[in-house]
Length: 151
Image (cartoon, rainbow, N blue to C red; front, side):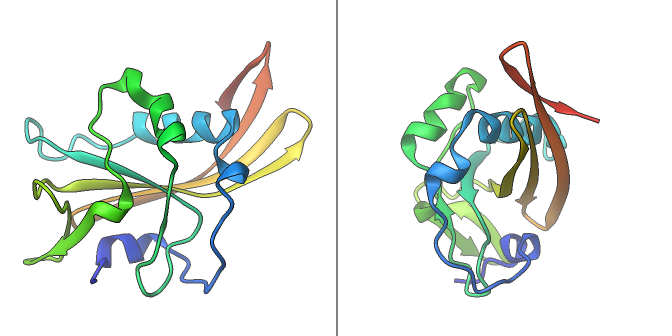
């Protein structure tokens, strides 16, 4: 499968399959929520799907989908989430779409999440939609029991 936009997000390491427990934490949720809040308004008014993947995307386009339980944490955003297993590349482009309804999908990637102290983390997040991509390294900190992005 030609996952060009998704491959543009990756560092293209061979990497092993990431353990979801490493990413699917409160800090991981805060990082993904930040990523979603920063998505550009591409093709306003056009329905979109979102797919959340963890860790690196391999050179072959293999990715580790987030678990359904982790994706359920984002239900309040009223976004259509699909499992990365249901993604397909179509031409022209290639464009990554939901295999079932052929809607273009935002591929949201929590590339890395590392705890740097008892109450702080560093995360790498990325996204792709059609031929557009974005990537960012963020810092998170816990204050008063809530984890948020900090400058």
